[in-house]
Length: 261
Image (tube, rainbow, N blue to C red):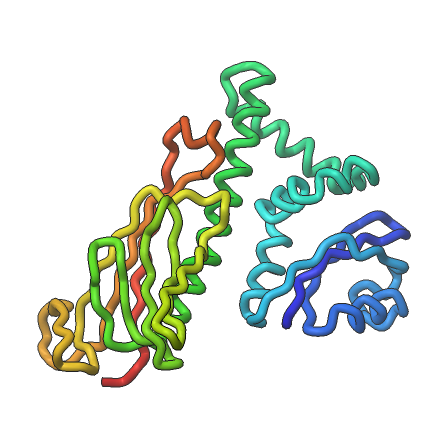
């Protein structure tokens, strides 16, 4: 397990974002002054952490949380904590800068500004959560084989553990369906609750390992090409107030199987 964590210095009130596979040990090292980058800023309070199975996912979350959108996400995520502890000078300057930008863009009054801010934050969180779901799908597809397009919204293949997997759109969410030893279907929702999938489309071309599963050609050039899967999504927020605005983000990704034919 890998952890992305946020520390707050009791000395200067500033935050530090890091990543580790042993959160308890790393937290103690920070407080003991054994980490060069935070040596003179201790002691610290652990105010937030996330856990990932994959190191690359944890590193990606660390990079995101250090970015401007990531800091906005954290302020929204930790708003109750911040209401009790207040803001540091750096955080206050950043919040004021964001407020000035929103004022310059907005044409309405104060109510419209707050509404637009909430909309932007909600859509950013939706896009971030959808990216994590797509990456989960892509990792399994890259090592899969014998792909088939069951319908425009259903993709079936055999994964690296030789289990039949089906990805499908169901009630505004993407589900991953597998079969148990008793051939019972086990659907599992992989998109977050705040994400609504308005449309999902599957396109496949190339050559499968099994000659019985024919796919469309990926174009000219001849030869044998590994399966190429294109997934298209149209997403929005599941929050009713935002869904009424009918603001959609269209995302498309193409994944090639790495299994040699």
